[in-house]
Length: 166
Image 1 (tube, rainbow, N blue to C red):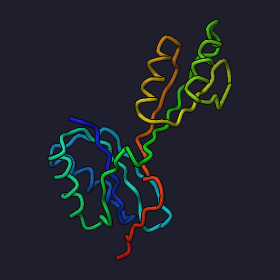
Image 2: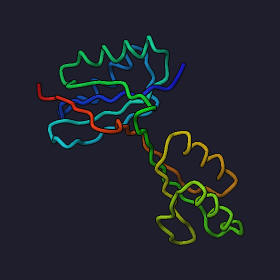
Image 3: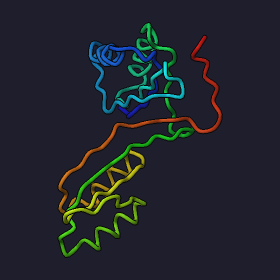
């Protein structure tokens, strides 16, 4: 079982996300993360799905999702020639004596402090899933007040031509 990423370009219609997620549910596939975003074409939305499974099941879900009426294009994202990122926002207490040590970890991970208010600071980190996991592990001894993490977004490197109109 391995984590796999797919991108689905769909018509930007009401209910399309429900149909995609329902397809996953009906086939018994778990969605590890799901992100929907706009694209350069306002009529098309980009759905990025991270799932865990074997290659046979992953290929099956690609084929099934491609059959949906709203699906314009679907493809597997290969990490070796793609960028896959998540966003993490985490709020820490800044009142502790070890705040300087925490700031050192933040710097080591190329994260940034984006807000300091009322004895707290908010850290932002855009990185791979593994780097975010590593950051959370490195900071687990510090007082974490609140945390939110996005699903993955993915884009292939270089020029890739997609014809979603034909």
